[in-house]
Length: 145
Image 1: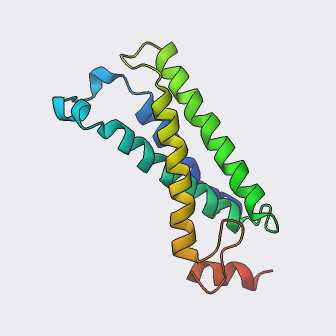
Image 2: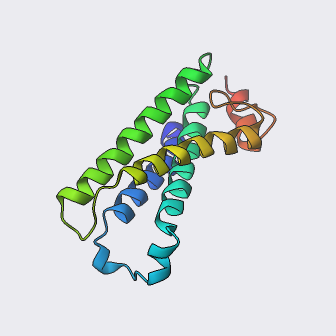
């Protein structure tokens, strides 16, 4: 039960992003300012920052690769980049009025890096271990160890 509670936020983010990025473009209200200002890339950056942040928190709470912060970050980066690439290819293959764009994948990768920066700012460490004194819920977790 405890593990499910920890991984649920990341699962919700993955499911939500999959649904939103694979939604047919006909269902979206696309106006001229959307294309003019390339808001699409900003959406990719924000979405993948949230994804990387949620996965970083989840894996840090689960203490995955706790002594190898950079390996954990590399793992998260690669998994998110592959996920973003698969979403782009599915957009192209499913012919939903969307096309695969290399710049979307680049924006996804930038978002992942931004997620790491947010993690560092919030917890004052890189993904791997969340200090027990930084969040109340972690105190309960660390007392059971």
